[in-house]
Picture 1: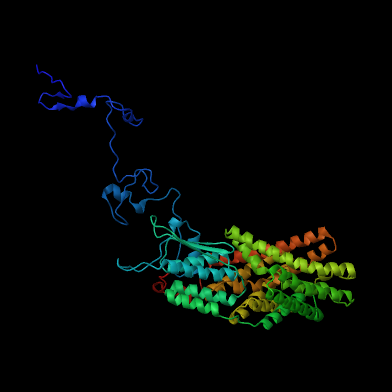
Picture 2 (picture 1 turned 90 degrees about the vertical axis):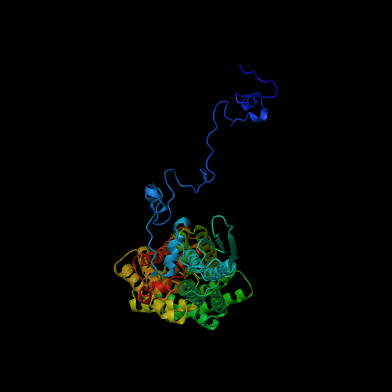
Length: 556
C-alpha cells in the first residue's frame, strides 16, 4: 500500500503530483459564470478562427466556396460554386448592348439594384500605377449635372449623365442623387473603404437648349471616345463661355409671333394677330425690366401677363367687332410653363417624387403669377365697363385646317427661338409640331374624339419622334419635344377659367380649370410614354447602330 503524502498536493503512483485534487479546490465567485459548463461536462469545441456565422457576407449553410468562375474544389465545390449560386428570387436578365446610346445603358443601370450592376470595363493597371483622381472626377460629374439640371433636364436623365461620366473614368461603386436644387454623388471603392461624397447646389435656372445640347455631346464623347479629364474640363469651360445664339430683340419678336400664332389657332384674324403680338411683346419687355431689377420670377410673370389682358379688354371696351378673348388667349400661350410641367410629370412617372413635387409646385407658383396679372386686368375691365367681354366668344369653332397648321408651325418656330435652341434643330422641331397638330386635328375635328385623349396621342407622337431624333444626334430630347407641344398647351381653357373667376362664376371656372389640368397631364403623360416606347422597341438609326464595339469600351 502506497502511503499518501500530506501537504499541498497528492502524488500519483508514478510519483507525479495529482493535479485533479488541486482543480477540485473551491474557486472564487468570478469563476461561476452563467456560461461556464457544470463540473464534469466537457467544453464545446472552439469554432475556427475564419468562421463568422453572424456575418451578412457569410455563405449560406450547404454552399461551399468554389475556386472562381469555371474552377472547382472537388465534386461538391463544382456543384455549389459561386457561379451556380442563385438568389431566392432569381437574377433578372438585363440586356446592355454597347450599340445602345449611353442614355439607355446608364438609365437601365440606375434602375437596377446596386449589387446587380455590371462593373465598367477598365484597362489592366500595374500595382505601382495610381488610381483614378476621385475628387476631380466627382467635381466634373457634379458640374455636368448642374448644367443639365439648370437647363431643365429631367432628374433621371441628369442622374444617367452623371452615372455615365463616373463610369467612364472608372468609378464603379458610384451613386448620384438629384433633387430639385441639390446634386450629390458618393463613391465607395470597396466595402471596407471610406466613401467620398460631394454635392453642389443649383441656384440659377435658365432656358438655353443650345448649352444643354453641348453638354450632352460632351457626355457622349466622354462615354464613347475616352476623353481625358483635362480635355473634358476644357470642353466644359468652353460650354460655359458660349453666348446665347439669339439676341434679346429676336426673343421679343419671337414672343410676339408666338402669341399671334396662338390667337390664330383659337379663331382670330389679322387684327387679333397684331393685337396679341403687340401685347405679348410689351409683356416680354416688362418681364425683362422686372428681371433686371432682381424681382423673383413670380412677379415677372405677373408683369408679363398684364399687357395682353389689357390689350384684349381695351379692344372689347371700344366695341370693335374683334374677338378680344382670342387676344388674351394668345398672350397666355406665351406664358404657360409647359417645359416645367412636362419635366415635373416626367419626374413623377420615373419615381423622382421629391423633384416632381418641387417642379409642380414651381409650375403652380408661375401659373398663380399669370392668374394674378390677368385677373387684375379682367376684374377692372369686367366691372368698369367691359361687359362685352364675353367668355363664350372664343368658343365659336372654325375649321380652318390650312391656317391652323401654318399657325401651329409658326407657334412652334417662335417657341424654339425662345428656348434658345440650336439653329439646325429649329426646322426639325417645327415639322414635329406641325405633325402633332395635324394628328390632333384629325382626331378631335374629323373623328370627333374627346380633346383629352386626342391631345395625349398627339403628344405621344411628339415624344416618339423627339426621342428618335435625340438618339440619332446623341443629344437631349428636350429641344425636339418642348417646343413641339406648344400648340397643344391648354391656353384657351386657362383663359376661360380666369375670366369666369373674374365674373364670380365659380362652377364654370372650376370646370374650365379642371379641363386645362387634364389637358396638361395628357400632354406630359403622352410625351413620357412616347419616349419610353422608343427606348424599348426602336433601335438607333444610322451610324450609331453600326459602330464597332471596340471603340465603345469606355463607360460600360
